[in-house]
Image (cartoon, rainbow, N blue to C red; front, side, top):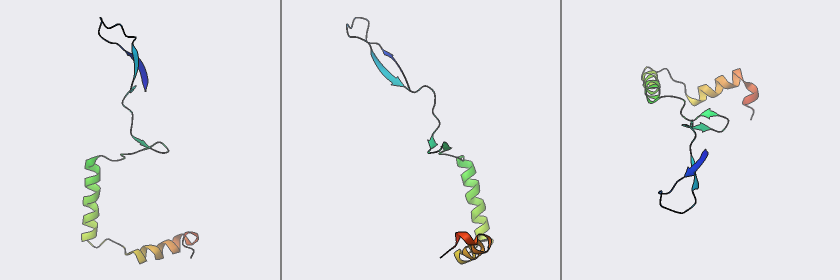
Length: 80
């Protein structure tokens, strides 16, 4: 943000005050500089539609299947 003088009416004897205004349109970022909105609305809708098509076609895994595959590929992550 930058500050700039705020002026009263010409006949007002008060001193000008400073107000803060945004320099430019600031990008909405999460911690670490990651954009908060990574996808457009259209991209999100398309991804949800693909996910629903996969679910209806049976291209899904149960949580047990995912865990088994994770244990096979990354055993150090699945210690009990």
